[in-house]
Image (cartoon, rainbow, N blue to C red; front, side):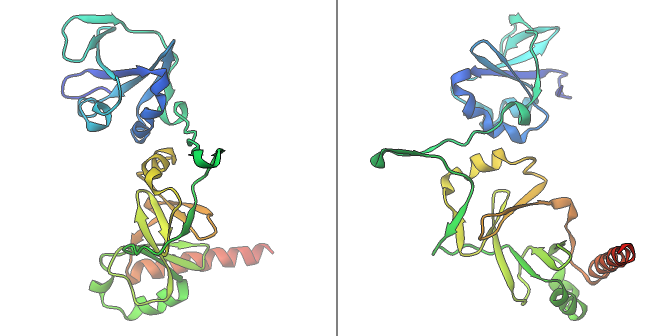
Length: 254
């Protein structure tokens, strides 16, 4: 359990079971644990900064506690409120699985469920990433000034394409993407329900460490940010050499 190093205390919060959906923004703090007790949902493992954060303070009817010597104290109080309950704790991302709410088209008399998808848009978004042919990138990088590549990071997809993140964009033909939350969305498209982007992001596993790239066919690819390297001649040469080694091994196995 997370214990605040500054005062040795662990912070808890509770909220009514009927308000459970309001907790989904806390799923990004994957060190937290969740449990239920009658009509209450309990969260434990908060730090002092987290228990005082806007995320927590904005929760409806939330009660905040700190744990000391197996007793729970209301935050800011010196008298114990109750003995530490014996509960079955689950990691928050598993215990708070997201069921996306239904979009209610009352005027049609229809209750329609929806998934994460994108639709064409006339609105212009600032492009943050480009997917280009790997050979085209290789040719460009070998003659490009180092300063031109310095702000950019890249990774290889399917051994044929390169995804470059950052600006300014390179003068290469490719598919453009823009960032919104943890998503990379095809240029000229937008989320069908843009007002739900925070909820979508909270539903994705580990959004701090992954990009979720959405193509125009609405297929979502999960990309580890740790796989992106600074774009330079050396990283391209090394990556291409690794791909060639793998392809040679595959040919030997055939």
